[in-house]
Length: 423
Length: 168
Image 1 (cartoon, rainbow over the protein chains, first blue to last red):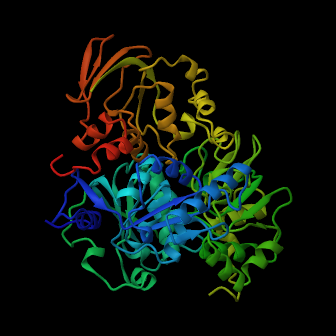
Image 2 (cartoon, rainbow over the protein chains, first blue to last red):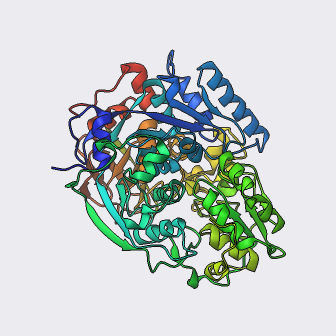
Image 3 (cartoon, each protein chain N blue to C red):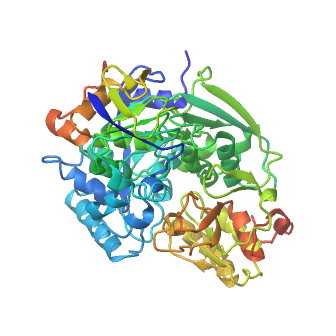
């Protein structure tokens, strides 16, 4: 019987000939990531293990992204704790303030490869599925155990196959597809499931666009959201195709679902769940105080490009703050080379250094009670950007256009003209 | 393992920010301070009302949201002995087991606040002693039961060095 991609990856990592859903395996970890938010707790727990050593310093990546550059005295202490830990255990792969969001760095610096088992002490670690890895989030204590042993137990998940057909209309982005799917399944609709994404709909998408989709998968409960490796993946990752990177042709799926992207409208997730997704038409005219383009699920080069295209030569509405946080140093540099940052700043945006930024509502871009924000970030639960604030989630195009209007608008009319610099 | 306690009833989609709001996490690292704020946005005064061994019951998707461990850690710290829910968010569930807080999947309909509950982890049965009924629960795989008995994954590794997953 054929096996899904998740089953093939977990069989390989578990040293089994084959595995089936429900089976518990012990998987070898190919890559482990922790960051400044959960890393300090992880380190405390790790130090409780007698004589613990990191099982393989070359397979561990430590990244400062959540409170970066240090946004409080406490954050500064946590950063110092991480730096000391990395030095003590000779962890070479350490990314300090300003490098960007962990999930983005992991792929752009070449750490994530197809067919890997990757764990991160962050729920959005599922982002690694964009490259065909089995990538998932775990807690800080479990990460301490992984760092000591290089292994963890996993229940082999059932796999749901999602095939996306057709071509997205202009002004409708991968992020809209993510919100649409969240709306279809609800907050636990795919809990514990592996999802495989297939179809002509994503063939033309680059890795950043695939990541925008996979990253948001966790908001409907997915354990892993994987795009089987194709030409785009192989070129990006610099590897040759392998049977371990794709599902068997006769793989058995729990569900096999098809969606057509051709008629999709821009989507907006209303407060207070990412799965509260509706077509933008249902929330037109909602007054906003702030717009945010950034996070592991926004702030990519395609996001910055479409924002610049919409904002070029115009001004953000008076009274609205637009905060743009490129998701990595690489994205920042490429956007700068293309002249995008200048366009964004001239339009009135605040462009901040690569980090998680306003997503977690820590100390950057917070909302006052009653304020409303439209954002490309990952979550909109109550208080996410500050107690009493309301967050609507949308694509970079919808955020940029709404920042011009001062209220939620459909971005499509803003994209009728195609500037000469758009490739 | 057999656990007994009073039911403390919650609904669907209890997210980790309800269990402990982010605003407190960014203000203090002192767990003694933090624990006083559990559930305060949806059940003011909850911490003061907890008696050791209380059993939280939830609906679907208990513990959704961030992967931060403060949520299960603080519930355990407050004296909660077990969580029974119709379903759990994946990472929260793993965190519970790895921190040594029993989490059991079971239909929780009709359980009322204050009902005396008994959970038999080995047999996989939930007893409502007040209402006089019993229900089968999801059974924990052997490896997870062993981790729970040791009080969490770190204790387990410290004592046994490694897991024995095969055959569990």
